[in-house]
Length: 59
Image (cartoon, rainbow, N blue to C red; front, side, top):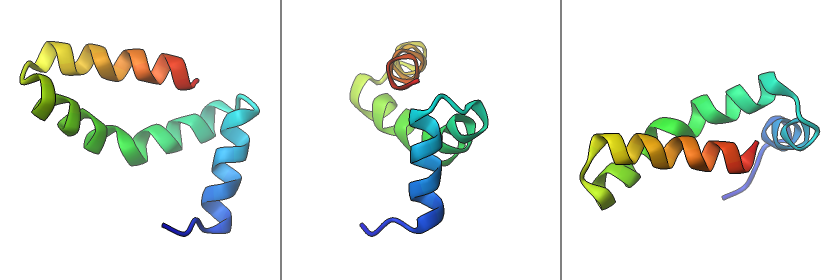
């Protein structure tokens, strides 16, 4: 996967603690990540907990 300059910029801003950039990244990937977690654990509450935990770790 090749990243665009915009995507690289968003990642750089996330590393600097920019909340808007973090939300853009979250909005882009959260749905897919949630469905992967749900497929693995097969419990909606647990999948949501996993998403929250991973978001906290990232940001």
